[in-house]
Length: 560
Image (cartoon, helix red, strand yellow):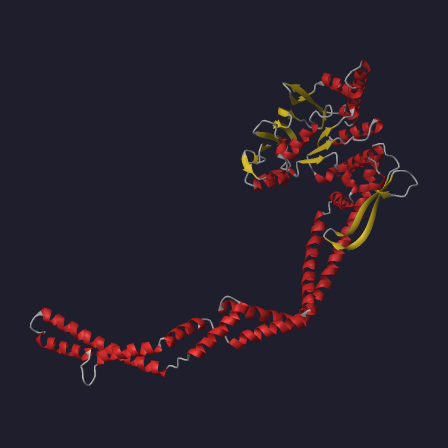
């Protein structure tokens, strides 16, 4: 439950600390005193989006802290999963700068807004002034019934099968679309593939051709220089070559090599040079012979390079990319050519999945409709208690196509008077009736949602007298199983509080300040009298307040 809330520099609240108790906590105060700021602060600490306008004027930041006790086991598990201390208490901290930046902490450790929202989902349920209007939105009704029916496992099983059906249908539709354009597409792909294959591309060929082109463009110069180098080494009839001269030098040194070690070394070097020159001479001769046998057709090379360039310009930046594209379209052609068989298999699979999904949807529908009978009974009893006798709550149910939530299209219809045909809530329920209907639904859902704290922001809007008293009694009953916080302007509700908090706005030095006080018994009676009679508290109002407090004691005794 929410144990305490500390607020600093939030709107007109400079500093306030509120401690809540178990059971029914009521907050009262004049209109404009700052009750909505308290709700905004709770929304903020729960990780909801908020505006920088919440920061009090002329201050750097707003700070909100909340302490929760008696944590649900699910919350403890979430904290442990996040690597955070999960002791007896949960401390949430949020700081909002004047520039709108936020910082979150959980038990002193930095956290994200997403993590805070996930953890707080099972801590507090806030029913705002406008939430009753959600009853007029038919798309919300099925979710309410599912929560009551506790059919989440069945829905999860259905949804998993439904997703499989959707995926198969998507693939089927894709193939059907491909088949409808098949002739045109096959013609295009076949043309592209034939065009690429006609070039007979080979990885590395382009680089080889560029080298050949370079040699072809320099062929004459290469042959001249090779011949000059060969004749310089080999010599001619008229002149000895460098190789023969090196041989003579080596022979001369060989004759004196035995005299000293250094002469032997010079002889060996000369002999090595001679053999190297002979080897080089042989290599040059072979290169000249090979070059004469090569056919360097520059026109052929240029034509081949042009073909490669043109195919690259159409299908890729490199030969590798063109070949990858060719493989891709070949696979697509194969897919299209085998699409008829694949489509037939998918249609069979789709029908099987549809039947399985349909069965799960029907099972889900049965659970929902059976649950509605119990749901309707509880709501009708609650509405009777809330001074709305004769109410008939009817599900307007239709079976539609399979969708993510199943096959059910559900809208709550209601008849507020005997003999009247049920009609949509939006068309016949007043604001006060919607508030009581929502309270009845919340009461029916109390055991299903397992939220420890429920906040009602002016649930009594549009009601008074006996209806308001019955709302107070229903809230009092609900608070025996969980903590309830209620902002109200109605004395009949405020009188039943276990903890009564008064929100007051004061002026000091031209600025507004809001303060929150926990009331003792005497102060409660004064506040109840103020709600009853206004600014001038009369003895009759005090007496009425005392009687209202006795009603609470009677209710307490009656529940023991």
